Image (cartoon, rainbow, N blue to C red; front, side, top):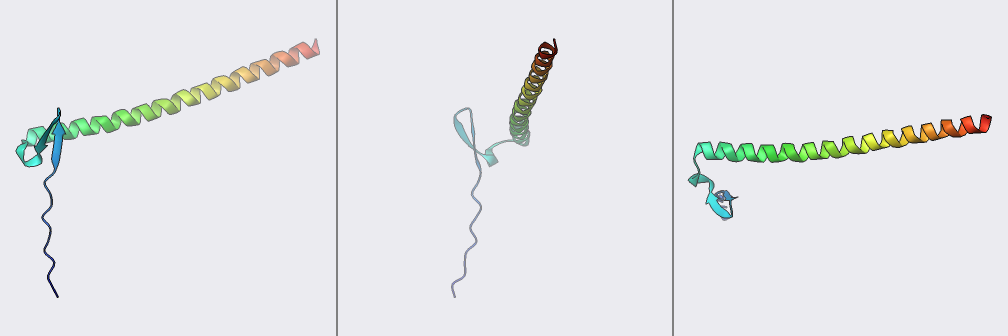
Length: 80
């Protein structure tokens, strides 16, 4: 039975400012900054998602409020 050779993990390539860099070419400080940028991107996406939910929820309450006021106004006109 032939032995399987372990594949060496491929070095990660990071594209910055339209240029490719091997991870090994970057300093620890640069790697930390890349991680911060990636984390901030995730947080921005999450914030945009949350804002979309908040806007939808606000509109739902405004629609319900408008319907409630219109219903009360209609009932007031019917009782006059």
